[in-house]
Length: 189
Image 1 (spheres, rainbow, N blue to C red):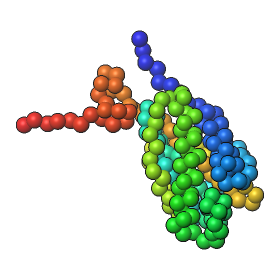
Image 2: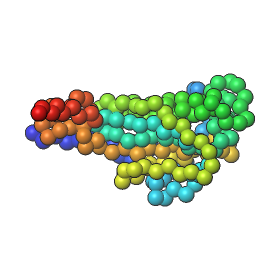
Image 3: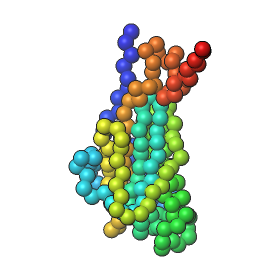
Image 4: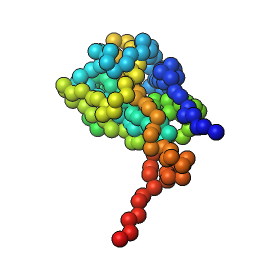
């Protein structure tokens, strides 16, 4: 019997991102957001080079990164709606809100995708903000980017996922402690 890895298509990821983002914006922020056409990393020219980017890692039989990117003004607007406190400049609360919104959206996407590929862990979000920066994946896999419009503002929800080559050893799962983590080697002298 041969083992076949489950496959996630771009359409699976895009559909999960669209549904999760719309749900989080409607239920948690009380904002309407409209999905635009999906892009992949080489085609992207509209993502902000200044603003807020929040990244979250995923690990399991499939692993990668999910992220949200937006302007500083839109990060303040989202925080205002999430916390019901007005914010007109970026501070710790705004960055925490961006991380929490990322956690909710990417966490919901993860839950949908787990139905096809099995359990995945989710890291704590890392939030970066400032001017003139760019984020890139160190892997060769492409990012799937779904832009959203909320009034005049734009939000970019991005995901880069690939099968985890370390999730299975040559002998099934006997060589792994759990998906993605190798059993420690013990050296004797």
